Length: 113
Length: 110
Image (cartoon, rainbow over all chains, first blue to last red; front, side, top):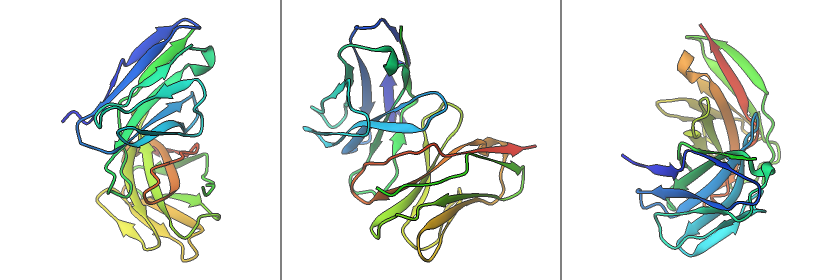
């Protein structure tokens, strides 16, 4: 059972570089989201999507872009990485008709030097 | 979105019940209360949710006060594997905009 798959698990970037964190789910879930978690902190919502072609901003969207061209994939793009974006990133998905259960990936640890 | 207040940390003896409180005094009538936990650095795991009635599943029980301003998550027989950060999240059904706070760090002691 794959569930929610995130790649890469670890990444080191230099300031100003760009990259894409990949997220894929095989549960046919309509809802997908990205969170970041800084050391000792809770999760903060970056962007979310309620279906293909539909995205919206969360609590901390600045510096990140998303798109949702398919139900399965929800990539997170950093166009110009900054040290403040050093964090652990989690992708989550949920079935639209279900009131609650988010399924999370294992996380992607990003360090920006 | 309702604000929540949870203790920063709690300890519980192995085998005893762990009672984790959450204050959500500004919760609106259509907001459910969801509980998740995060073990070490893993992705959070769903535990339970409820609107106004008490709920129970194989993992835990959720007690919501009659005025819905607070709730308590109960792990009936805590084990070492229940050591985790527990998050209480009010959210409207269908919004999918779940806002995690800082949670309660539960440590189960042998």
